[in-house]
Image 1 (cartoon, rainbow, N blue to C red):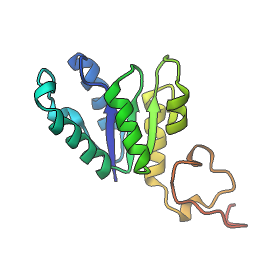
Image 2 (cartoon, rainbow, N blue to C red):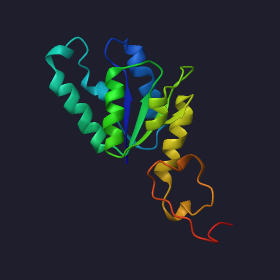
Image 3 (cartoon, rainbow, N blue to C red):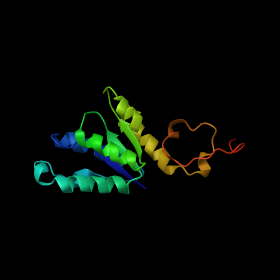
Image 4 (cartoon, one colour):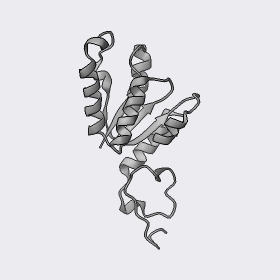
Length: 154
């Protein structure tokens, strides 16, 4: 299972682009797809097709999309749309930022990176048989195959 690391790059510093992704890579229990491995900053106008297609390929290859929504980004918003249309599980973190209704509609939203990662790690390790619970809490609506069977819980 893979997680695409979605967040702003264009016009941001190395630290803004990389720091949260490095933390995510160290905490996620899934394989990660980091668009920074194709760093096109400074050449965006010459590499439009490569940037967009590389990001789309990563999104389509992933089960989860982890979104850094602490700063508005056109690219991030577009990636969320494509991930949503492809039925990916999209989990965003916002920090102290105000949350757009559009983000809430298309993502599970958490204030911190660590909380978002906890949900992805939980969802990635769940199996349908382990999820036979009467209350599914944060997994409901995530597209995870869960089944409730009467008497299956302790």
